[in-house]
Length: 231
Ligand SMILES: [Zn+2]
Image (cartoon, rainbow, N blue to C red; front, side):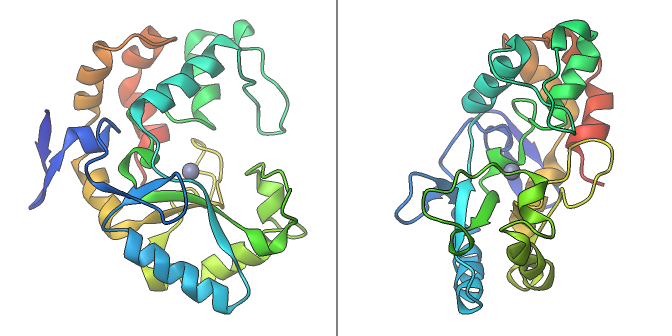
């Protein structure tokens, strides 16, 4: 096991990089896991939303390194579509390796660098706003005015903070595309983001095989500042 020290709290790198599940508990009734210290706050958020007619459901919670690696390689190989901001498919073969890395990181985290590794971050939607067979896409149009989850979006603006949640990707900083559906339990997540060290990620990724590895490792500081670090 590798470890790092932040100000006061001891944080295992295994937890930062999605290599362990020991800090997680299962979300009741779902095959999804959340940080055990974030679970009570999330339950309170759900309860309060329900009083306002919003049925908050979880589309994605904890995701491990291996799963993120699979997503990364599927996109880098072209097996899965890599989309641009307009939703059009990008031909990564026509880009330089670094451009391809940036195109992927606009929408998908580098393995070892997803906030979903921590169990503190969730992608959520409002089941009360759509039919049971609704195909969730997690795109901006669903959460913007006129979309089914706009009401949830506005509610989160007002209330998420009351339960210790924030939305780290609410606005476009030029790195990761805005994600209105992504909420983060800030107290717990900040202990991970404070302990996050790109040099340790570099060290770990050196020992892993993945597509576009050289472009990632040679530009990791830049990628960290633009796509990983939350200002
Ligand atoms: Zn997310």
